[in-house]
Figure 1 (tube, rainbow over the protein chains, first blue to last red):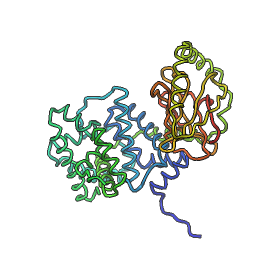
Figure 2 (cartoon, rainbow over the protein chains, first blue to last red):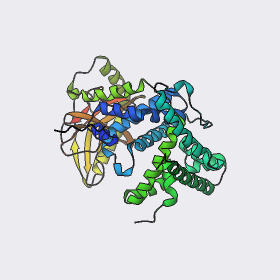
Figure 3 (tube, rainbow over the protein chains, first blue to last red):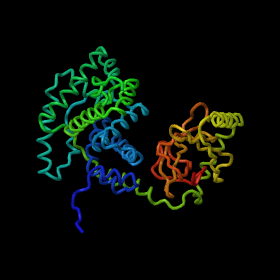
Figure 4 (tube, rainbow over the protein chains, first blue to last red):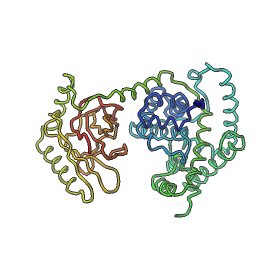
Length: 190
Length: 224
């Protein structure tokens, strides 16, 4: 009998999580936990908050795994969406929304340098992604960052910045279109 | 099919739409593979963007997540297990305080009865009181359309605690939501998809819920 050596893909892991396999949840964390934690750390501004919400997010994955639909997007994107929604809920319910400047800087004390070659390749790719974002017009980049990292809706951005809602919508739309197109052009997006 | 909300798809993926617009786009995308694929494309781009920004690590977090859910598989028969001595005392204190007012208790009972009387198109199954909390009552409502839900006649939990619902499947409890007051009565819409033959239970847990029950069931229905 031929034994497949193909690595288990994310969707298979989700199926196992839906079957209450905690080790599969751990495997998902191994693959995407760093991204999820990174998003939460940046959104919430503290390690403690990010860890708390990350646990909530993976618990939500545990509960909702059977509802995942592959035709609606990759598991990685689904995980990040769940984590972001948890972070937004957490800030609203706990009243800890922070007025932060969303700078694109790493948290040096938290960077894992245990796999230098892999890290180097990742850093090169990430640099290209950051260049794409940096190339967006400033007002579009600001709208994108306030929405993504700040968890603000378009009307909240309009209120906070004093910019008309229609203008905010236009900036968000253009930012998203350029981000997607240019990442694809760089071969690092869709 | 409504007109494709193309201008809003990126903002939807970004989570930047306000609720009415978000619900409109969601409703459309459920029946439109083209727009769903567009949203997926935007979401993937955002994930690439997010991955490029921060790369922090939390080495001990994985173990906490796995351990929390591994415990959920170790279910034996928590429904009827003896409760540790300290817990019933704390629970009793809290519940006595909550139940002290006959007016409150009557109002809860009235809300419970009214909620069940209002079920026009569904099946109502009474839950069994396990003896952990005298007077607690609850029913599972299985509507012809929509998600099943529990209606509970129980005191509000003290601060920091909650009534958590569980779907029982093949002998295992699956977290199904936290009870919250709605129209004067505690209810839980079951978050876990409910299947024929599943049971339900309600336990007393920390606010926000837990992945596996930490106390015996107060109300239970072994199977439907």
